[in-house]
Amino acid sequence: MGFWKENSVSPKRNYRFRVQFGRRTDGGGLSDSQHYWWAKTMKVPSFTINSVEHDYLDNKYHFPGRTVWEDVNMSLVDPSSPDAVQIILDMLRLSGYKVKGQSDTVLMTIGKIKASGVDCIMTMLDENGAVIEEWTLNNCFILSADLGEYDYSSDDLRQLSVTLKYDWATCQIGAASGTEYFPAASTST
Image 1 (cartoon, rainbow, N blue to C red):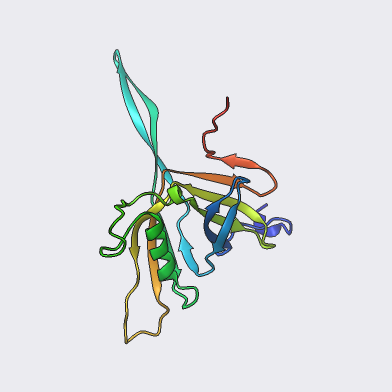
Image 2: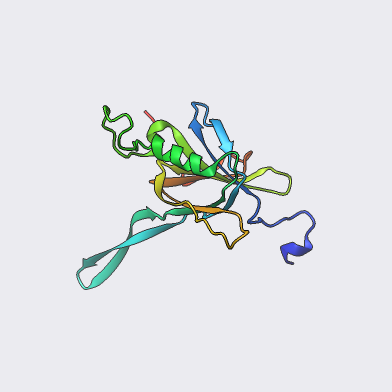
């Protein structure tokens, strides 16, 4: 019997998600975080595993190689308050970017947002608002940003597009289960 005939089962819905950027705390949560309710779409992290080929005598053997995490694209609607363009520019500033002529006495280079303690978390919710799965982009930074366009002939809402690059992603399934997939490597002594 299919899930659509079961009253107690509800499939995951694409539109039940939230995006959050904030500073990581020692307790594992985010402080000073803000949910971006104007996030229109966001690509769930995906990965590719390279294959390593090894020749032995007259046979070929294949082994899994490096895992490469793909870039994440996010589309946003630009509200006037809070200003999404300002938030994107603040993220760029947190990466170390300085506009020429402003504070030239300190030489800074572009770095990862993680260095300033900011994480990106995508959360999928169920029909009651409970967490189903939660993805964290580790060591993320803005790879590119398209800040939309001005157009006199259109009544559409202004849309922004941001691409995030990250080293790896972690995923926690369900808030209460505590099961974490693709966990970060723990350093146990």
